Image 1: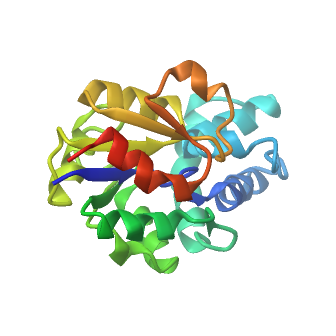
Image 2 (image 1 turned 135 degrees about the horizontal axis):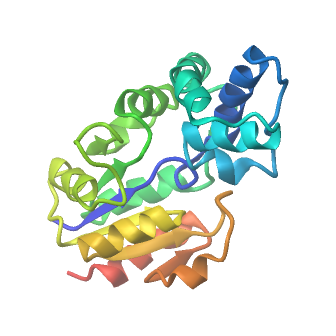
Length: 221
């Protein structure tokens, strides 16, 4: 079976607002106030909790690795308790997912968000049951850009890891696809920023309504 696997943060959903809120809650506990803000820090949010803590603490001149490690569990707790206050699916995302299934593709999620948080978020958004698989950062001993989570997401979806494409938004996703030897599609509407074309993916995606036709071209019958 042909399979389309999606990254979650910055690809299927804009989670940056809730991620930054969790980081700022940590900074307030440190007595530093809010240090990260939309829209300028949206890309930082999508690189993970430790990246957010590092960026904010460096901005405040308070960075230490120990402080990041101390507050990372606090950040995860804050995020878990307010995971869907500002998060929204990107326009057309679920319509594209449903059309892919009609067209005979299996669909899944491969994210570097911890699996339990990814499960909680997708269920809160009402979209979890639309996907045949979900592999998170801690589902396996390795995470993206190691190719094994992508391959496992394809297998759990009932698909062929060799007949898979990854839809993502960062260099991590591009490296994951390359390591797996499959096509990479990077979305241009996420907040990760940077010159995505310079990463030389097999395709760029400007709107989700174009994805079913693109998937059929990259993974022909």
